[in-house]
Length: 159
Image (cartoon, rainbow, N blue to C red):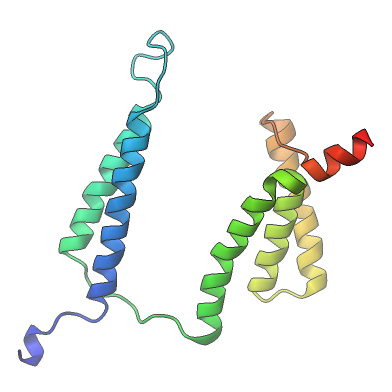
């Protein structure tokens, strides 16, 4: 194999990502197709959007699988740690959603994001507090979405 016939760097990681997205789209489409609803509520029903979204993602995944293009090098050092820390922080905030409620989980997540991107502790804590209050106001009052207060705070009110 000469230099002109070598695959582009990173095509294997692109193909792995394409297969992962394809698997996700199939699972998402399968789960979305199982949504049950009363026909009288809407002629299309709620399952159309997830199934359509899954079909589009599957199509784009197949294109990406067969035409992977060029991938950037994997991050190293601090950038890699930030790339790992951000989804880990989102997972932690999701796990804290029930115990400490929406506002607490948002505070943890936004404070952590500030620290990941290099803000000082003071700026991160103030930003986290402001963001948590803002998002609680937007979702809880303006959009009237039910937001859990958290088991920790619910238990302290009862006792």
